[in-house]
Length: 562
Image (cartoon, rainbow, N blue to C red):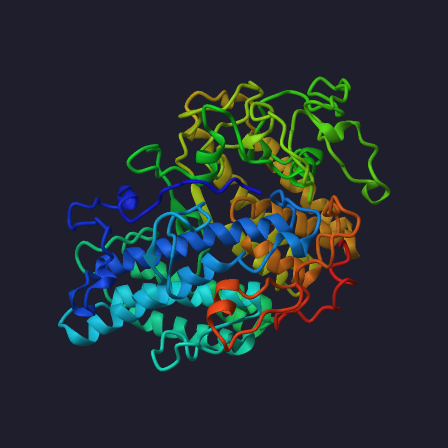
């Protein structure tokens, strides 16, 4: 699990996006929402909405990635390591107030949440001559996506009574009804986004372009139709062509390179590129998978500080002796349930941790594999096996991927009517992902990019994966597709959690460190802060409650790999 520490991202630091912040006072010591609605600055309100939303995306990406082995999950028991407070700040940023510091647990920096600010914008729009159509359209888009995600992670959410002073203890609505409400919000947002924003507005994602926001709206619809299985509605949007389909449309948050006043670097970079070395453990499953198939993206995703891991083969092919002081598990005989999986040590210097490993952390900060140039803006892995430190690589000027065009190609593959059609989307999804990832190599000015995969090598790789997919059948074919989807989702893997519960693939994910970690979480507990403060909300007994679109067998029989 990442070390969530002081990573300050506020409205002020995001001034590096767009045209600057000299148009207004962004000193948020006193929130604009503490003023009467008609005295609040609508641009500040929209800033706060975007920041709250961005903070939630970073947190949901981490949670989704940890459960699906794209990222490392700490803890032997799912229930004990996903307590009721896991989603507290995600819930509060959606509805009321919580930290807007991306990468922070919620204790630093406070801003009013998405719904509260949306309502303030609507009030100003009604009470003044200002046309806030753009502001409200963006806010409703982000609120709708947030509601979809709350249902995906919790199974229910507050909507019909949320934000209504007549209902200080709002009831939670069922997942299907919240989905319907979120689709309605998207319809309303689309109708509003025909106008241009007010002067001075800061759109951190699309620079104030309503057409791009409408593409996003349609793409959010697509991801939701995948989960509900509404192929007719999905195909209608695809036929219209107005959705995220190229890297120019990618929905992402851009970071900068400033380390102080404010720190606007990618949070993974800020954690890993310090004077005392890297803090994040990368997922052994993901690194071993990509190494085994020689995926061209691995040099961009991961930066190796060493050429060998104790108990594994080094880059020269020789066996590296186990070393209990450096890596305790390297001396452990793998348990039976790890038969066929890498247990502790990955070859060629990929120093990470396996799913659920809760061992103590030795002083390996200058040995463990660090975040790479994509998406964190770190170092490109050019076999230099150097160390990480302040300012190294791309200086943190990475992105937080939210919805990328490559993801949409995989969604089309999921909804495809035949294996041949699915193979085509597998190909195009990989092509877009690899091209996007390779473009980040230029961020590391000191890297030796001569070792980067060539265009011919990339083409051969993609051809090989597609050929293997076409030659396979059943689970083998589904696993190839799912593994490539998960590799593509690296950096923005919130949807991997949905896909894994929807399909059960890939079945190739490594087991948990503990032979019996408890049932795989089909949904999270209701945020504990809401349970404590709302007498109309009760807590679940466990993590086995299935969201409405998850119609698969009950736990523990599903997902089969768990």
